[in-house]
Length: 305
Image (cartoon, rainbow, N blue to C red; front, side):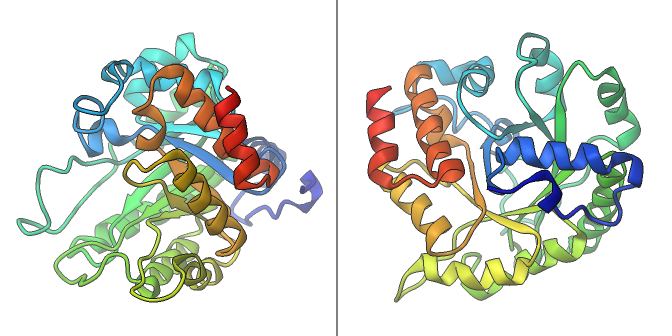
C-alpha cells in the first residue's frame, strides 16, 4: 500500500492541482499503486464485433451493460468515449471515468493504410463536464501507433494532451500499440518496451500495451524490459481476446508478480459475460490487482459470487 505522501506528482501539475492529482491516483489504484481499468472503448475500435454474436451474452448488445457492470463491480476506473458518458452517466454517477479522447474503427486495415487516430475533442469541450463536477472524470486516454507513417501527428497530440490533462489534475493513460507497414512484429518484447519508453517520454501516468509474445521462455519475464523502460510511468497490459477465467487470472497474476506490471485494462473478457458473472469476474481481477491475492483465492471469489 502507498500513502498520499508517497505519490510522486509530475512537475507539469500546478501547485493548486497537486492534491487533486494525488487523490485521484489514490482512488483509482485503491492505495495499491496498481490500476484495474475496465475498458469500454471497443464500441468504436471493434464496432459491434465484440458486443453481438455467438458466445457473447445477450446483455452486451446494449451499451448500458457496460455502465451496469462498472457501477456494481469493484474497479479502478471505466474508460470509454465522452459521447457514451454524456448519454448514461447521469444514471451512473458513482463510476470513476477515463475519457478516451481518440478512437478509430478496425475497418481500414494496415495493409490499406497505416493507422491514424486523432483527437475527437479538445480540452475546452471537456472542461464543460469537468466544471459541472456531477460526473467524476479522473483521467483521459489516448492511443498512439508507433511505427505508423502518421506517428508524428499522434505524438504531437499526445504530448499536448498529457500537459493539458496534468494542468487539470487528471491522470493520463496512453494506449501504445506499435503498428504500421514498418512494424514487422507488433508483439516483439523489445519493441513493446520501446513503446512503453515512448509513453514515458510523453509524460503518461500509465501506459497500456499488448502483452509480448515469445517463442521460448516466459512472456511474463519478457515484460520486465517494458516495465523498466517505462520507469515511473506505470505499465498495464491489455486483456485481449476472451480466454477462460482461470487462465486469465493466472496470466494477470504472472504479469504483476513476475513481470512487475502495475495492473490491467480489460474489456471483452468482462463485458461479453452476463451481468452477474461480469461483476464477479471484475471483483476477482481487482482482488489480484489491488489486494495481491493468489489465483486460487481470486478464482474462489469469482465462483462464490
